[in-house]
Each structure stands twice: as structure tokens, then as C-alpha cells.
Image (cartoon, rainbow over all chains, first blue to last red; front, side, top):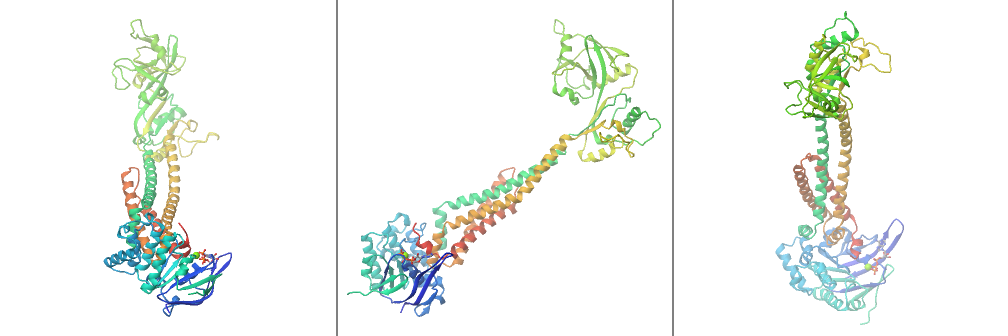
Length: 225
Length: 405
Ligand SMILES: Nc1ncnc2c1ncn2[C@@H]1O[C@H](COP(=O)(O)OP(=O)(O)OP(=O)(O)O)[C@@H](O)[C@H]1O
Ligand SMILES: [Mg+2]
């Protein structure tokens, strides 16, 4: 099992109140499958994702990665090598070109420059952009194109787990189709574990497993096949 | 990879240039400030050279043909004034204190309906009454009383007009001169003015002191002076001079009954006879002292403020990239790395700002190069930037990543 959550809870504590965003969630994720997490706004989907990304530490329960407790791993190394995150708002470096954005994580894991360049160009092509995009800044791209660059960046390091938070939230239906195709091919074609938080029924329909989040609790949705 | 990021920041934004200029300007300003303070110190040094004059007045009745400011003259003066003959003192030599001596003596004159004083001077420029007047010399005459061959005589414009004949020439006037205002013992003198003054209400006649002395001798008396003045050579010796003068003159409190200073043979009732005119120097010094005190007091305050502004500017400069740092962290960049690269960037900016401050301070003449002040400003910026990076990397990051632009 690539990623498993066992009785994971998390609450946001502020001076004024405590929000129990994730309550006793247990679930498992395997490589080679596309997962969708759906649920109402505020139900805790993003929180769950950030727990899996190691951006937040669970208050209770444990997350294990390849059988190892996430807390025992170096969180920086974990995010650098094992997991990649894709955001609704892309989160590209605005001052770096497309190529530089995609090469950034390769620089972090000390891939030699020439090899990094080759990989970057390769993944940029894989997400359906040609080389003419390499020198552009994110501000010179459409939303759909930016999201593809974000996906290319997530792919570059070959991370086992791809976490995506509403990757199609800002995109039109045609771009959504493209992104769904990409994510599906990553799971099925490259044997990665792809977990997508989404409001989009089309994305949910494409997933192998759908989890539903409701007020911090997670349930697996029955699928009619 | 971080270098690519920094390179992009330098090439694709210009905020760094604004920060650099600001930090450089702050560093430079402190040099400017120090320069202004140093300038004032210099002015204070110079203020000691403002001429100080000793004027001994009320010498009427003193007779001496060796008029000068030395113990001998003063002693003679005191003896005359106090009518003491049995007092014996060792005169102090005051001459080394002074530059050239100026002597003034007054007589009385009458010429037809014109009357007033006939004043003998060694230096026309030293006469205070004439400073507000304009002096017009006849052709071929000049302002130097002592060096001119024919005796210089300056009268009022009114007197001068009276002596002008039809052809425009000036005729001689017959003048009765005496030592008392009643002119009981008068000497008839033919006077041909060589110039006139305008703008004064009196009809006094000004002439060289030598001429006045000759007149006094013709009247059968020893030449005397009613005031002697001299410029103090070295203002650094003012205190010593005052000390020596107190041997002859007391500075009695005018509200008190006059007392004789037991250590001084001075004339207590002529307490104002010797006046050292150092008011200008004293006032200038006082103003400068005040300015210097204010500047010195402000210096550490402005330095602290500049460090604060520098640190705050650097803090916000780095804080602008909170989203970038959040993205870096989510991609697995170590926080220590973010801080290190920020420190390196700030170091480069600060080094450039340092050079710029230094160059500006060197180029602008009034500035004094204050390396320590500039360094303090740079250090504050460095610290502000690094603290900012530290704060950014401590944030969870997920909140920032969720934000939409
Ligand atoms: N930083 C925070 N501090 C306090 N409460 C928070 C914080 N972030 C989220 N929450 C709360 O936690 C709960 C879950 O938030 P989360 O962002 O995970 O929801 P979500 O399912 O992703 O919603 P959406 O679909 O709108 O993105 C919400 O009730 C939210 O108000
Ligand atoms: Mg969300």
C-alpha cells in the first residue's frame, strides 16, 4: 500500500475557536489508480490533502507512506521526492519561465543540469505544450496552459504520489477534459497514485475510486459499473 | 536552482534597485549628517579668529607721549585719574597681546557758525561713528590718514559746501581749536578739508592723530588720548589678558557700592574704562556650541531611525515573496536554504549599497565618510531581510497556497 491513513484527525486551532476539519479518517491509496475526493465546500478536502502532502501534521492517528510513518520522514525530502502537489490556482513562480518552473524541483533533487533540461522539455511536451512555451512567463499563458505547466512540474521528479486540489476548478470544459486525460494516463499509464480533490462530476466519473468527504469524515462512494 | 530564482528576481523586477537606492541613501545621509556636524566644529575653530578688540575709553586728562597699551601707559593713566603719586607697582607688559594700536583723541573747535569736536584718529576705519557714513574724498586724496603727505581733514558735507567757491574749488577755513568746550585757550588753525562725510548729524571734524597731537602741543600740553583700542592678536590668550587687565581695572557690579579690588590697583570707578569687545566671538561661539550640541544629540537618533527604516524596508522587500517561499516549501525546499539564499541576496544588495553610499559621500564635498554608520545601516538591512525570510519559512504555507492571486 502506497499511502494509508489510519484514524487521522486534524483541527485548526485559533485564538477564538477550534475547527475539527478532519475527523478519524481511515483510507488507503494504491499506485496505478486515480482517486477522487468529493464533498461540499468546507468539508475538509484540502485539509486532508495537505495532511497527505506533509504540509500539516495530524493531531491524531497516523499516515504511513510505503509502510513508514510520515512523521518519521524528513518533510522536505518527502515533498521533494515522493509527493507532488497541483493546486487550483496553479502556484507557479511568476518570475520564472515555464522551463525554469518545471526545472525547479529537479534542481532541488540535484539532477544534473543537462539531464534536468531533457526531462523538463519531455514533460512539457507530455502535457501537450510545445517547446515555444519554454521561454514564456506564467503570466503569458492561459489558465489551462498554466495548469499544464503545474502538472508538468509535478511530473518532473517522477514522484509516486500526485496530489491535486481542484486542478480543473479554474478551467473550461475543454481544458478540463485534457487535464482529466492527463491525470488518468498518469495513474494508468505510469502507475502513479493520483489523488484529485474535485467538485467536477466529470473528474469524479473518470476516477477509479471516489471518496466523499462530509464534515471532516470520509466515506467511500459505491460505484455502479 | 535557487540561483535561477535570484537571477530572475534581479533581471525581471526592479524593486531590488529601489531597495538598494534606499539603503544607499540612508547610509549616505548619515555621512552627510556627520559632515554637517564636522563643518560646525570647523566653524567653531574659525570663530576663535573673529577679531576681538580691547577699547580703553575715558582717557581724557591722561597725558603721555608714549600712548600705548602697556602697563606704563595704564599706570600713568591710573595715576592721573586717581591722583595718586605714592603708589608704586610693577607694570605688566601688555603689548605682546595686541596687534596695531589705534588711538583717538578729542578736541573742540569753532569756525563761524560751525562747531563741534575735532577728532584725531590713527585709523579712520576704526572710528565707529564713521561706519554709518559715506566718505567722499577730493581728487588725489585717499583714506589712509597716517601715510598721506598733506594732513587729512574730513568735515561734514554741510561744512564742505560752505567752503566751496564759485569755481568749485575749496577754500581754507579758519578754525579755533581748544581742549575745553569753552575754547578759552584756543589755537587758530587754517583748515583745508580733503573730503567730507555724509549721513551723520554732527559737524565733527576728523583728522589724523598726529595733527591732533601737534595741536595739543601747540596749546602747550602733552598729547593725550581719550581712547586707545587694539585688536587682540591671539584670542587663545584672552583669558590671560583679562587676568592681566584685572590688575588695573576691576569689573565691579554696577548695582553694588564700588569696592577696590584688593589684588588690583584698578580704578574701581572707571570700571567700564577697559572693555574687551568679544561679544561677536562669544555669540558666534555660543550659537555654534548650541548647534553642535543639537547635532551631536540627533546623530545617534537619526542613526537608529535609519537602521530601523533600513531593516523595515528589507523586511518588506523579502516579505513580498511570501507566496514564492510557500511554493518553494511545498516543493520541498529546506527553510535553511531559503534563509541562506536570502542572506546571500541581501549581502549582495548591501555590499552594492555600501559602495554606492561611499561613492556618494566621497563625491559630495560636505559629507564625512562614516564607515561604521554605513555598515550599521547595511547590517540592519541584512538582519531585516533574514528575519523576514525566517518568518516566511515558519508559516504553514498551505494558507498562502490556497490564496488566489
Ligand atoms: N487556516 C484555517 N484556520 C481555521 N480554520 C480553517 C483553516 N483552513 C480551513 N479551515 C476550516 O476547516 C474546514 C475545512 O477546510 P478545507 O479548506 O479543508 O475545506 P474544503 O473541503 O477544501 O473546501 P473547498 O471545497 O471550499 O475548498 C473549513 O470549515 C474551514 O473553515
Ligand atoms: Mg479546498
